[in-house]
Amino acid sequence: MRAVSTATTALAAPWLPACGALRPGTDPLWAGALPFAHGVASGDPLADRVILWTRVTPPPDRASGPIPVRWRLARDPGFRDVAAWGSVTTGPARDYTVKVDPVGLEPGRAYYYQFAVLDRTSPIGRTRTLPSGSVDRVRLAFTSCANYPQGYFNTYAMMAARSDLDAVLHLGDYFYEYENGAFGDGTALGRLPEPAHETVSLSDYRTRHAQYKGDPDLQALHRQHPVIAVWDDHESANDSWKGGAENHDPEREGAWSARKAAAIRAYLEWMPVREAPADGDGRIYRSFRFGDLADLIMLDTRLEGRDEHAPRDDRLRIDDPRRSLLGPTQEAWLAERLWASQQRGAAWRVLGQQVMFAPLARPGRPVNPDQWDGYPASRSRVLDLLEGRGNAGGGAIDDVVILTGDIHSSWALDVPRDPFDPRRYDPATGRGSRAVEFVTPAAAAAPLGAFERVRKSLDQVEHTHPHVRFMDLDERGYVLLDLDAERAQAEWYFVDTVEERRAGERFGGAFAARRGEGRLTEVREPSPVSAAV
Image (cartoon, rainbow, N blue to C red; front, side, top):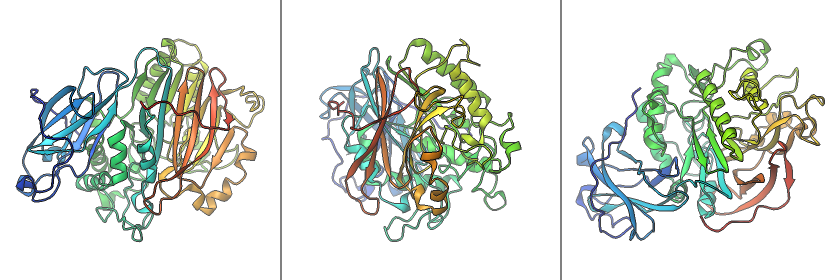
């Protein structure tokens, strides 16, 4: 599949109309509707640029033609100090989505942006570039797994209300592909999936993206913070891998290659991600630098190189060293990124990825084949890198923090190679642990504890798994990651409910790793809130 790029025309002078959406009906072309019904968004910030996104709902008489769109970016919300502006043409080839990438911005500062078509202006969005040079502190919030029929997006509302974040990370399952009732019934909440059937075609995926982008809490999140996102499986199909998916039937739904291409194309159109020239094949892994404090490395554990799941009790296939979760190209890229980060002296290396990395399956027991447990050779190769084997420099790679979604529950874990062998791992001192891992609860999907069989299987984990420092199977919400030169601290925030649209969250616990230790300790209080960034 060939990626659809956004072409920017010659710059024009900033426009003068007042900020904010104008009254419906000002322009008869829209006959009372609003052209920016899906809000605005920003993402993939760098020190000198950031992606700006919107979508124009075409009026009926332009539903198959091009629409010119203007944009502007300013240092203040009143647009008195405009930093960049331009115009772009969108149309049906990219579902009337708009994506621009203004360059030459100042590092580590807030900007405000807006789009216009004819005399209609979009809501004003706020974004932020990444810091450069010496950086004292970085605060990131991350979440995953938002299932529209299973609840309101109060998690997003709470994240949007924070004024102390440098960026938000979305670790996948931004939407779910199912028809209503397959995984949650939205009838009682009035949250029925669109289209009504499972998403298979390009039109289906575009429609589902559009429905999610119409949610006011998701719009608020995108309007307030730059988002760095990666997909998991449900943006295409449940338990997807490079050559298929558990929830894909070729006889009924056609070739997986066509469905995968449709899902990738819609994702690139509808998400504020930066599209590289080679993105036609769906490369989503990339990295971000937060000055000298941290490197954020976002991985794709789904569509890039994952081999097919093995049955959970088939140890011969699971242990096959040829099987991979990342694929050889991404593995090599990860090795280069980790070593480069260590060499440049960044304090922290943060991996944003989808499925639990730390070992969870006990020896001789069946594994969850969807996690890194199902691909132990891939995990061993990453641990080899961290221990100093297999990387270009030959030295150990320290101070690695792994951020994970997918599993609809909250976890804090040390990451030793074998947590069940006291000769290789000491939970009291952290000896043998090469990283730490923080797992976010779902934003709005059924928590893991709602499934009785799973709850029973995990009932004793905190007693039998010495590297598991924290586990909660019942709550929904997000995690705040607070980084400074001395420690990485994760804080869980749980929303009060998803059954009605209502604000409210509570502090659920915190764990921190100190530089050079590779292990977690509990923290009783949340980190102090910094001044608004």
